Image (cartoon, rainbow, N blue to C red; front, side, top):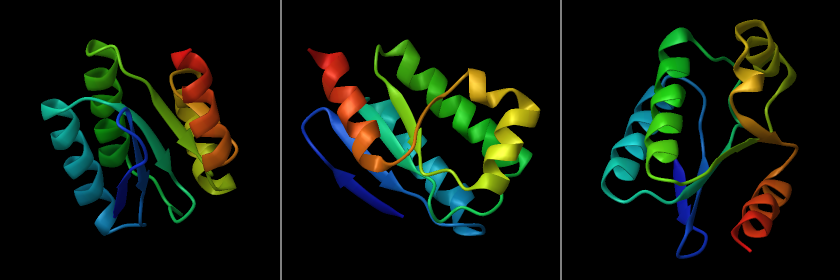
Length: 111
């Protein structure tokens, strides 16, 4: 996982596909429990999303919402987007087309 402190308030996470995906989601969730910031999660390398990973995403979302922070998902492949649509996750998460638009949406929201 490539995690980058994009600014003092925003963390950018580039996820890998399974089997690393589960560990990466756990790592960012653990980090945000200690030091919550706005998070952009780039899904460009993710080709499959299972129920365990969905659960981890929901936990990350809850941690950030409870701390008043924001979560943006971006660059979701069509096959993964299908999982979002079938499970209703598309209505729970804010999704942007790419990393630049996700970062911009967070910066606009801050003002």
